[in-house]
Length: 168
Image 1: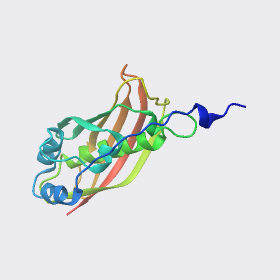
Image 2 (image 1 turned 180 degrees about the vertical axis):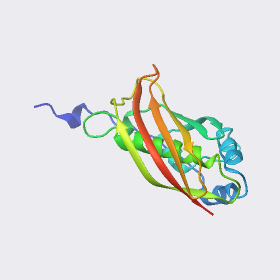
Image 3 (image 1 turned 30 degrees about the vertical axis):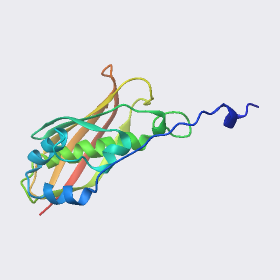
């Protein structure tokens, strides 16, 4: 039997983020589209979870957002592939933020349901993965959105449908 500990090479990753509360207070004064655009352009810090995964906002439009990350081994589960929770977090983020882009200043949202379908394994070293979220139906109390993750070759890796409650 091979001594796995002797073969393993230690890696490290430093994660830095800013206090999210001042950013959230600022966001409450802006429309969701203005706020998400400011985050994507780097004028406002992204949520700390984005730093943990190395996720960045590539595109923001009314009712649609795109987030990108390049998975590394720090996101692996015990069987050697990216943990499904990473895909679920990306999908929850793009579904919720797509809804957010449709909201006026001072109005928030919270995920109340997320259904994820995992279609292919995600691995490190194969390039960026891209998550797109789109609003399906806006509502005054509930909004519905869908999301998908594709790899660098455009293959569909995971899909989601989500429901967000609108908070006033």
